[in-house]
Every structure is written in structure tokens, then in C-alpha cells.
Picture 1 (cartoon, helix red, strand yellow):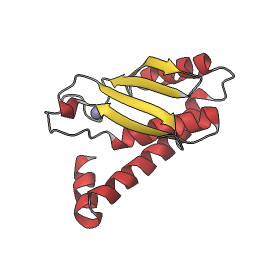
Picture 2 (cartoon, rainbow, N blue to C red):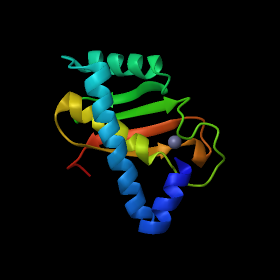
Picture 3 (cartoon, protein in one colour):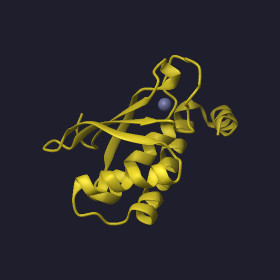
Picture 4 (cartoon, rainbow, N blue to C red):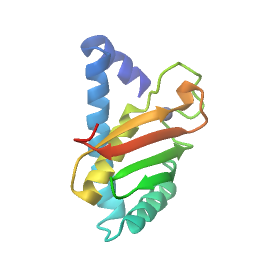
Length: 139
Ligand SMILES: [Zn+2]
């Protein structure tokens, strides 16, 4: 993945490369959710299904850290994932693909668009990746 990123960045610039990773992650998250989680009635059920499928497929450990359901804002962490676990501190978060992946899963469950931003990462010196999820239109 990192050599793919190098080539995309060299050809299209960092911003466009990020968009490509986000969109590819989004597609993967959407397909993953449709195939391995399926339709869920409640949010708890959805989160449980996602955690179980991520674990079964050895993709990573997802934890819901905080949730504000009224405003549809969530903070979740992803540990032991393949994206960046073990990477050195590079001063910026690198899990753009995961951001898109999470946005894709939320889209399947909620039927609306969310913005997902990684705020902590192995590559910013943390030991887990932490993501903020909020409705797309909100700031
Ligand atoms: Zn990360």
C-alpha cells in the first residue's frame, strides 16, 4: 500500500492521492459492511456486527470510545490494524484509507454521508488510531 501511495503522490500530488485512498477505502467499507455485516436495525447491533466481522477477518479491533447519537458524532479507535500498527512517528496521520472505510460502513448503516477524520495514529506517536465521525454537512 505504501509504494502504491508513493506512486500516486508522485503523479497526482498528496491531496489527490489522499482523495483516492479515501474513496477506495469508502468503497471497501461499503462492500465489507454489505457482505459481512448486513442490515442492522439498531446502532448497537450495527457496531457489534462490525466489530465481530473485523475481528473474524483479522482486520483490526474496533472500539466505540464515545458517542453522541443526538448529533450523530462518534469517536472510535482501531487497534492492531494492518494500515499503520508499528509504524514510526512521522508527524502526521496516515490512515486515509481507514477514514474512507469507516465512512463507507456508516453510509451503509445510516444511509447518509459522514466525514471521518483520523486524529491520532501510530504515525503521530500514538499506539492506536482514533477517528472522529460526524455528519458530512456539519463543521
Ligand atoms: Zn493510523
